[in-house]
Length: 307
Image (tube, rainbow, N blue to C red; front, side, top):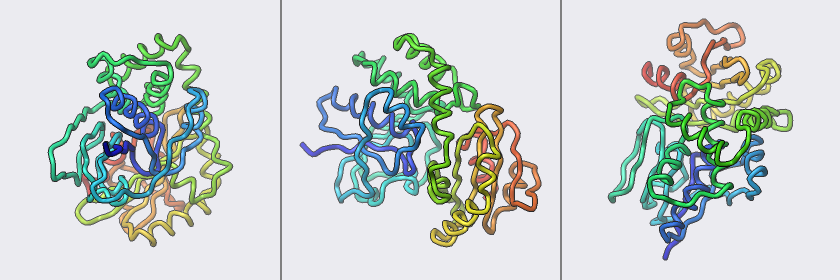
């Protein structure tokens, strides 16, 4: 039997990595020969979760061969996916994002719900199918929920995410809020990364009306710790704009403590930020977005609507 590859989006976050590993365990429960892989480096937050669960990082790939069977988690858009995906056979998708630029030549299993986290969907599948859960699976799913919902504070968080969080916390017998804060803080240390690495830690590409944009995001406990590197970050952004022929590059610095974000916008379409959020970009091409923490729900939709 051909091995099925399971992966999340490029520049993987904690949900993409953790969900792919949990999905591998679900696939093997049904007798499928599956392997969780990743489409980029693992960030410090995800590393913290994997170390806590005593799990080694998954294998990294950059492309797939023609006819390769794949399962997508935490994404569906082709620009965010593996190179060569159009030649692969997508047999399943588990996601919580908008559906865009997606088509297949064969039928598939597609589960998508407007939850705060893909791992919440996986947890519901596990419960419905009576799949035995172990502590590694539980900490991976809990970590993903904490990451994607910013400890349940994000506007993307649903009651389903809260219920899964509470049940997984009880199963593990830990203080999820304490664990989660330590995990999130682990991901805010960006000092070891170059500017190019910083803007690619969690970057997603979007396309609408023949316009190409990237929305990148990093979490921090103090916005100024990241903004002080603005000059080198903007240089890296400009290079990405030139290399990828982007119309807009949006870089979000999100304060996980005060739940605000500072945005830096570059590119020919940067004025869209002013229209989308009713703010004025200052001389640094930046603005404070109060109460904005979610790329999926608060940032991408108004930008794409204007595009």
